[in-house]
Amino acid sequence: MGRSFVHATLLLVAVPSLAAAADFTPLREDNWEAFAPQGKEVDAIYGDFVLRNEHLVGVIAQPLANRNANMTVRGVGGCLIDLTETKAQNDQLGCYYPGAGRFQFAGQDGKLAPVRVVASGQSVQHTNSISGKTITLEIDAQPIDGRPRMTVRYTIADETPFLLVETIFANPTDKPVEDDLSDAIRADRTFTFGTDAATSLFWADDEWFRQCYGIVVPGYEVKGTGQRGTLLELAKDGTNKLKLEPGQSHTIARKVFPADSLLAARGRASQIAGAKLGKVSVLVAEPTAIAQARNIVLNELGLEERYVPAADPALQTDVLPDFEPLTHLPSPWQ
Image 1: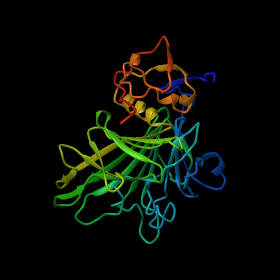
Image 2: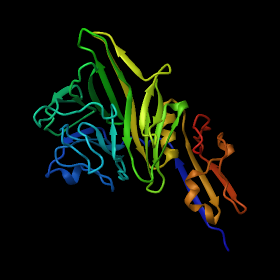
Image 3: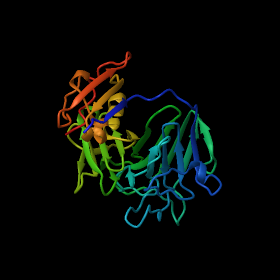
Image 4: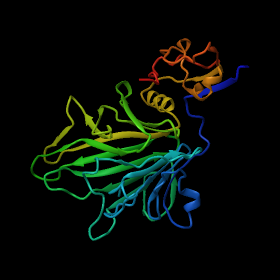
């Protein structure tokens, strides 16, 4: 039997910008085709908010008390319900809950929660479509006695390959307040989950449907808890407890991004952490290795070798002139 050859290129850096703007729009019938993302798990409806740039498309559910993504993913108002790459749209996200669903982003009597949109430093109505260098969407949660006030802020910039998701906790009362710091994610069926401590990365990976989500929380250790590891404790100095004295506030920032593989997500997290990444071209000569070609990592590239195709593998690498060893990139295998 003759050998099959696969030439796989692993590109772990962003290409130069092709656009110069980030977009915000509430979804409507007249702009649905232009702005609604694609994928089998898309949950967007009219009234939800789209944040988009050349790298990614995200949908924030309109902050209503009765906003559910579907029959099992509920209470998603103000949360991130769709996220995918712009050029290869493949949404598989159920929901990402900043604050783990303990705060409700909804107004009183069936109304929207307070919403603020800022485009390139200028406030705009959340009912308008707008483009700018930077777009920020802020939503206030309903106050809860004895706990901090919480606002979630989503920021997208024109050339940034991640969505910045911040939770701002504040204590406007005259007494100390406390809360647990945690998020939650719904990514069902064939997703697996894990963390990479070196880059403060939590990942959710669906190898079958080729969609991965990365969440980097600088300064915090992310601990996956719960039955499937989808309740994310955000720990600092060994605890996820937050205590605020009167007048104090505290902000936690996350960089959330989609990728088409776990390897790509880990590469992005390493890039966010400041590692130098490069382009690698790999020639694979092995009939059974075609589907796994993108997962091959070689010692010559400065990485630990975890996988070599069976049955007399023949591997040959062609490293591009501008390549630098990826010494800071974590291994893509557990």
